[in-house]
Image 1 (cartoon, rainbow, N blue to C red):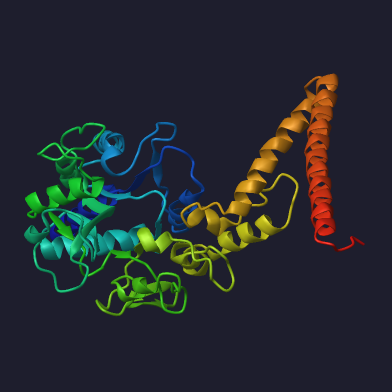
Image 2: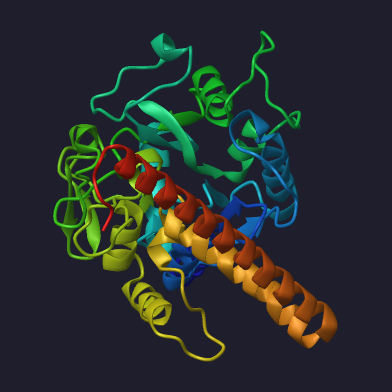
Length: 383
């Protein structure tokens, strides 16, 4: 009996070590420190996960120009992960999470055991691939691949990223190939290992959410999957169509378009409104307060949702930024430049102002004289 107990104990300990050895990696690519990184970085951190940002300082593009990003992620997977590890590769600027490592691994392994697939792609309702007819049938509107979120075992991800790609992606016939359709080709050719999360068990494309955000500028979006069927349930989003609560939210396209008619925050979007409601409310509140009130040594000026929502710059922002740049030059002249050169610059500005004003004064007098002559010629008296 004691021998059996000892044997069971050894087996359980071995199983626990195996479970503990599996690591969750979250990785993305961004060539500059973009403020929109606050969506994934802060929400991953809030749930105890430390994501890795690759590529800082190495310029890259999107769509067909994403080859450099693919190769950098490939190197990370081969060099920094184990075959049994679970890896999340996500878009850097429009993704947030609402769960920690334990729940993410549990959901992933549930799908993996049930389907036998080890790579799970985010799903959407639109398709840009010429291979649309080759897609397998799906029971929900989310039937096509979106490359913004990919979750997979290390061994399967090594198959996905098996070969390096050129910096500019091209199709078999030499035409530019979108990054997303590069993934589509892999999925359609490797359905024994890859699948689409059409039931939205792990990932969800979001355009609007009942009770949080709905666009009035783009009302058509509300009638698209991801624009309807999503509602707030506690601190999570609930998909009423699939009856699931996906923990990874992706806000492509309309999900981060600015909404200028929003009653509280001009230019906000679905991504920011969800972020401030259930993503990281404390961080959003602090950033909003500091953007409105100046504190020494603290960020001031840019409203945080402007950076999240397509990083838009209004005409007034543009003028203000240009004035600020000009002011920096004047300040530099004052502290580091020649005093006499600064006086000369100011004198030139005054002369230019006088010339302009004099021109318009002379033009006004000339017009007045012409009017007086015309009135006298008509027999009327100018008063």
